Image (cartoon, rainbow, N blue to C red):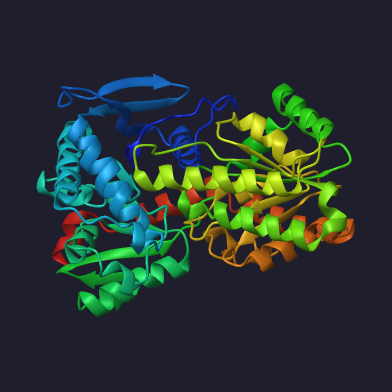
Length: 466
């Protein structure tokens, strides 16, 4: 194999020192590139009046990056528009928030063409190209039009929606057809893979072939489920650092005689934050004897502030947290601490370690690495309890968590009571099973399984002739 070229919407490589506040995708991709020499290509995160020049190439902490800026129109139509107002809500089962606008689709196609044209001169004959997530579904098609015959893989980090939902997308058939210009299409779970297959078989007159392959649109693509993990070893090492230890101690001191419930995620309607607050409110109402024993910390950094749906959920959460504190607080205690800021990864490790309950309640989630980080951060002799939505991809692997339906405040409240009352022996038993999975199916296992599967695909010339 030659180099590994990773392509994602945003290029934001972490330093590996725990001093950043990047998401799980960035951590996973950086880990992949440190193992396989190569290049990380994508958007810089900046906008500029003139954004059609060559990429800016740099190298730091063992990762070489090539980034381009977007102009304001591309940012509005491709990123805020088609990616975050059309595909994101649709793929997370929120038809009520999905915006269908022809200009958004045009911007999406335009930026993918530009990414392909800018990336093309950087590709060498033996390179593997690994494209990530819903922003870049048409990229392989555009690269093939530029005579790229390298193996190209695609991995979707978010859910693939049910057939009945996906067909509500104008141009849905063309989007799926573009996926057949990849050699390998990967999903987080078998359920998402099955939903994709159902669409191909029913809407595209496709057929399922041996060797995990699908054929449609005159092409054959290999498919698979590749559940992403965390760098469990690296995350465990963060716990021994000065800042993680200090943060854990601060949290322990500020919650003395209290049991800490923690939730950490980007402020997003898919994460079930409103449902989480309502479930905690129900717990307080149903368990007056336990009220002053608990404190819920919700960390929710603000994101996509220019999208109306995100402004609206922030306002609703502000009101809901205020209502709960207004109803149940006392002069020396507030039941909810709601914080809209980013924290460093080593600080989060300390917070997880101090928490008796990790509360992860997405309404729909591709995987959810917060759940795995919470498990990795626990004290083996006195671990906390993970409460996890059954609609997170991680629920397929983390079956020893307390699995709940996040749409039910009663289920959340009951799970909180059970978790807070659970004896140490059961907590240890459950944690050991969870941690075994987190350590075994880590980011390296995900990376190596996907790259091996992509390398196993026949070269493009052979695939086209078959």
